[in-house]
Every structure is written in structure tokens, then in C-alpha cells.
Amino acid sequence: MGKGFRSLLLAALAALAACGGDSVPPVEFSVEPGTAFAVRGETLAFAAVPTPAGAVAWGVAEGDRGSISADGVLTVAPTAPLRSTVTVTAESGGVRSSATVTVVAVPSAVSVEASETLLAPGDSAAFRATVSPGGSLPDVVWSIAEPRPGVSISGIGFLTVAPTAALGSLTVRAASLSHPDVYGEVNLAVVTLEEASAPRGVVVPGPAMSISSGESVRLEARVVPERAPQDVTWTMEDDPEGVILHGDGLLETTDIGGAPTDVRSFVVRVEVASRPDLCAEMTINLV
Image (cartoon, rainbow, N blue to C red):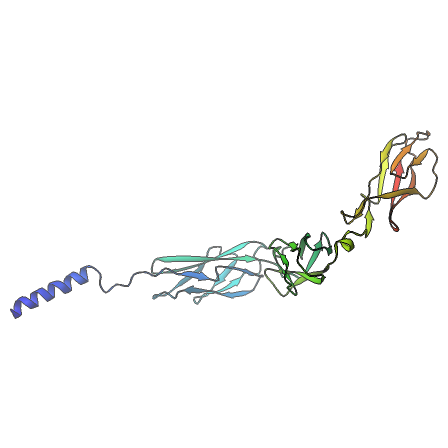
């Protein structure tokens, strides 16, 4: 019986060995951080998570853009093209994973523009951010510096004011995605509908325009904000020969002759009907 038992035991051990009972299956892992931003010459440390049982072989797919040490520390090449990517690879036990690094310039400033800075409850506004210098990552993270109930801003810079939002001032911030300590801000206020609808200025298409002698055109102007009454009045500083400007912006000219190269210029002025102190001027070149 002892001999038979030993034979069975040996057979069982052989079967276990044949099935690889002592081998360790490969462990799936990821490289962290999976995405990152770096400037030229910067170093970044990467790790395999969870840590594999065996050694990790680190590498860089684009060897001319960076190098990586045996323990996963990447050094971005000083000559790596801006906005290019560096792919960090890691391999252990037949399992391979990777991460992506975007090479960017160090941002120095973020400027923010707003479609509107006086909003009434229920309004919305769009914001645009520009990161400088060129070569910086253009992406930004939008936020409200001092969050308040009823006011929110989306990831693309679209601000919404709920009808129940309280009146008051607030600050919208756009921070560089690659360098959050670099940001720009713009101040705005939640005010009554009456205040938000009051005229604040008038704009014309440009500082100057040219028309042909004998031509008639209707001049255009826009009162800011758009929901303000759009009534304006047009006038001329001088009284040029052969030119009639009506108060509604209709400009009529008469061909009075002259050399083809002659250019006559005069200035027109537009005022907000309810606020004559809000005005703009434009030069008309009559050719």
C-alpha cells in the first residue's frame, strides 16, 4: 500500500508540474499618468499600476523626442517639436501598456473675452480664452472664481444664469490645462432685466468705408447690448457737395465729376436715440 501511495503521489505531482501549477499568470497593468503635458527638457515619472511581479522594461516610441530611465522617468528632448506627442511604453511578462505626453510651450498668459458682461437672471453668455504664446496648449479649464447658486459654466465656456439666481458680481476664470497656475479672468454682474437691457454703446462695421460717387447706401450700426432698443440717428460733421445723409442712415450721393483718382472723404456720426452721449464715427471715402 505504501508503494502504491507513493506512485499515486508522484503521478499527481507530475500532473501539477505539467499543468504549470507553479507559474504566475501575467498581470494586466496600465501606465500612469495615462496622459500628460510637458515642456521641452522637463522630466516626468511614470509607474506601472498595479505593479507587475516581474521587471518592467520602459521605452519611448519616438526616440528623437525623449528618453526614459530604467525606473520610468521620462526626459523630453530639448528639440522635441511643440504640440508633438511622446509615447511612453512599458512591458512586463508579455503585457504591454503605454501613455501619451504632449509637448507644449510654457504658457505666460490667458486672455478671456465675454459676449456679454451684464446678465439678467435667465440669461446666458459665451466666453472665449486665448493662451499665449503660440505653441502653448490652447485648452483651458473654465470655472467661476467664487461659485454661487444658479450660475454655472460649461467645459467650453458657456455660462448659464438660472432665473432664480441672485443679483451680484462674479468672476469667470479660464486656467491653462497644462499649467493651471496661469489663468485669465473677466468680471461680470447679474443685474435686473432693465439694467441688462439699457444701451451701453453703439458700434459700426469699421472705421471707414468707400462708396462710388452717385451711389446710395444704407449705413448700419448696432446698439449694445442686442436686446437694447436699436434706434439710432445719423448726422454728418460737414456738408459735402452732392451728399445727403438721412437720419435713418440712408446716404445718397451725386456724381459731381472730377478726375477718376479724386477721393473725397467726410465723417458721419451715429448716436443712440435715447442716449446721444453714446456714439460712434465712421469715415466715408467717396470715389
